[in-house]
Image 1 (tube, helix red, strand yellow):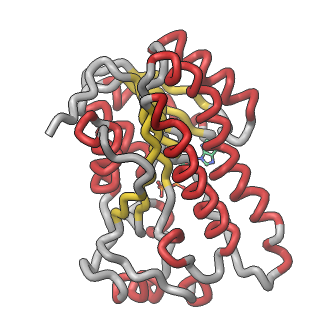
Image 2: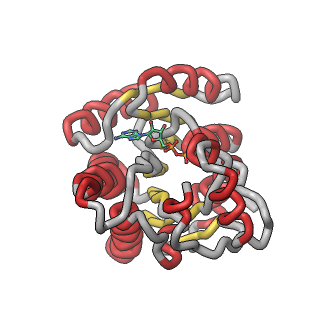
Length: 257
Ligand code: ADP
């Protein structure tokens, strides 16, 4: 299977930690140069240094993906230093959500849509001219277990991730003729700082509904990202690749936390 990414440049949003970071590292292991982005400046440079240790070029660029101007500046810096972006991974995300009936959560719709959908739109717009010009590109959007059947008590997150799935499907149709493939990776729950905060009761509830009985390692999700970035998946387009162990979505876990 050809997963060689030598000579390609990847931009991974929100890659300072967690699944984004693991994805940046896996792309680098397969030879890609990497632009490490995160809103959290403290993790960007450290991650970029670790990616460079894998033997590729990497730069860290802090930016808020929901801010158009910051994204434009980030892509300009990235392209100046590492050349046109061949692979875009829209991973940056927020976990903020809560039940629809709690009016205090009204603001979470804006935040979730701004970061997940708005961030993906901003990054995609900025790299697209270069991809069209070279007639090649891979765009990978992080959807979620939330796009399997919704996850109760987090409508803002559900809506944002379903909208990102819609963007994935739509752009796959529009951009295929330009040599650009657009796919999604849908992780279930993984060993990240989010799941570390779960109570034992919530963890048990999730794992009772997981055929493999465990969370994913971030690296297992990163493998799927690398596959969708690689020549091996050149005929895969508009697909949502689930990496969730067969997880059955649950509908009340946040109530128990
Ligand atoms: P996981 O660990 O499950 O992959 P996290 O929520 O911990 O997910 O990671 C998502 C990353 O996205 C974090 O490093 C976070 O700082 C980053 N992030 C959140 N919002 C933004 C944003 N607006 N722009 C860029 N990065 C962001």
